[in-house]
Length: 295
Image 1 (cartoon, helix red, strand yellow):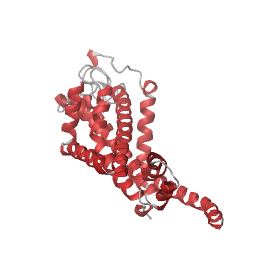
Image 2 (cartoon, helix red, strand yellow; image 1 turned 180 degrees about the horizontal axis):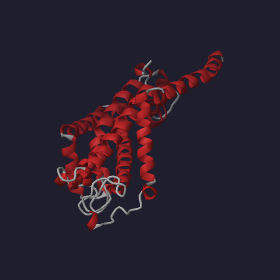
Image 3 (cartoon, helix red, strand yellow; image 1 turned 45 degrees about the vertical axis):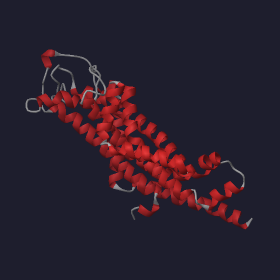
């Protein structure tokens, strides 16, 4: 009874300390605050795209082709007279959707595979980890190109291709965390109480292994955005006339000397979005892992 009362007494203190660590990690550092500002800005601009520009993303004005940035076209126009700002804003929607969905799919699949491999061990562990080794043996962009080429160019196939290349990382990270947690006393107590192996895994082991998975997911969102741009640049992602930062880069490479703004602005959008993901990922690492927290 005294142990139970003591744990209840200290619970608000632990919660307050955890909340303070979250607040300090996310808002107390200039870098993490910059990352949050960048992501909020990109998300807000993408959602408000129809309100921020008077042009349609596919509107063509041949007479205004290859115009430099001006008061009429803040980021200039491309070779077809399309407004670059409009296409960058609508392209942000594609990149954010691909980044979120591909990361979510890779997180779910990789965490499940890694948890099953580590918890049950034996032949399951050996087979799943050797499969992950095979996937890791390929350069990630080569594997993504192969998957996208087999499935064909479309938004769902693009998301699936990017998710596949990220699954091994999540499986490895989850496996290492589960191997550590499954030896804990509370896990042994759950087993002794008669809980089934599946219940022990999903109710007691996996929830206590999510910290490194969450951090990896945040950092992987930036990688997914880069991968989407690379595949679209190669013609294996979003197809014209839809807007995509990767396809805009592909269009702009032919005009780097005459109209550098065509490739410059989508390139900056990719860089700033990925930077925001990385900075927020570092902040989450500090918040979830007190051993790495900055003081």
